Image (cartoon, rainbow, N blue to C red; front, side, top):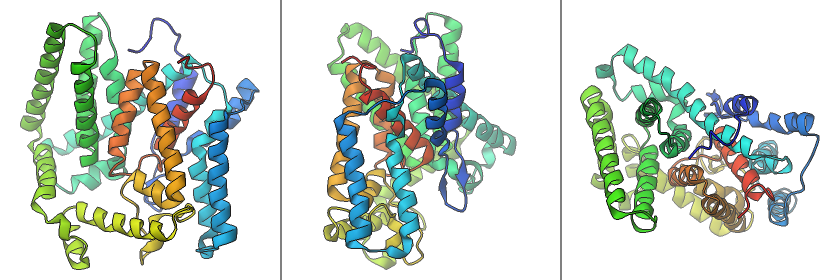
Length: 400
């Protein structure tokens, strides 16, 4: 629940964080280059004139990732022709620690939640307007490019916004109407990303939430059944509205998911089959890329690629890992990946114990999304991760 009645809204932080979350799609890079949050250290120094000393766990992580860079550059000395890109990638990677040096308060956490919702709507509404203007019945497979474009990977921000709105509570009927209208818009926005990972993130986190709520949340069984029934009816209503208004969207995802079960994925390690299947579905290509990553890490277990992307393995020097965890695994090797996993676990534990449930379930949905798409390698995702690391590791901000 958002504590509107307990904390004054810091509108300056809302504007600033929304700016950090707004996507900047770079066609030349083929990625979301929204690293505006790099400005925050300068802004924080001007306003707070104070720098925090991170705890030993964070300092160890900075040391570990710097050591991986040192080994890659000065000991292994591989891919020396890409040393400039290696250093740039290192800076982008290590930027997840940029915000731990600056103090945050509860008002910043509230501003962060509001900005996630605001940034999502600023991105969704123009896309919805364009879809309606062009005619909902005119949507085709080309719409994934013309409407979604770089937004296909922005769905994880919508997922965070969904859970923030989901947990918002009010006794005002008008406010509750706006709440459910907002959920509807966010769900349509997820569909308009044309990204299966977005639906998997939503469905997976909803399943885990209902499992927790049903078996572990302390509430009368009658109340639980009533709430679950109403939510199921609400989602069924949304499905019927979308299916009757934009049947192509529903058919698109059904056809895309069905390919996972109709294509012979276990035989996709043959180049010819991969090339053929990838014309219609990316699952085969993902298996191919992940196999390359696995083979590479067997030869480079400690340092991985030294922050270079999977593109170094491909003839045209272009491509991605098609999964955030696979990307981390490739860039920093086994030890660096294990440390990264500990950070994620600590964040989840801290958010849950301190009853920041909207952020906990939102971040959980991002992790599910991350199984099949990059998230924290993108500018907006890096800011989300950097902020969560900062508030979860800041001493005294979260008390448990």
